[in-house]
Image (cartoon, rainbow, N blue to C red; front, side):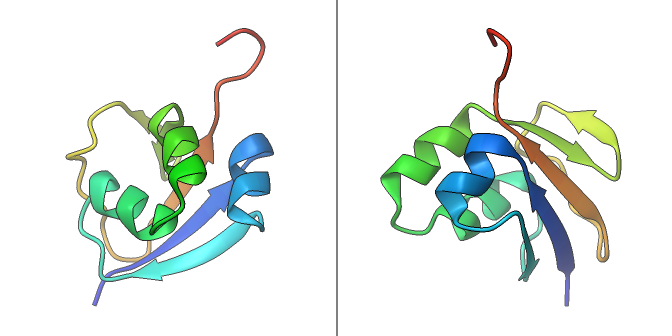
Length: 81
């Protein structure tokens, strides 16, 4: 079972309703976005604009694999983009 710790910042945390969560059974960033946003279109739009850092390393590809126990930081655009 894959367990991922997620920290959301600024507008992403506000839209999600809390700054941290744990997600199970996701294999990549794309799956994480789907799991976090569910049916919430506003949150989905925000997550589509975010940057993702897996264990401190920036990843642009939503196909990035998420190893068990990793931490994903979700940062929306700020300071002009």
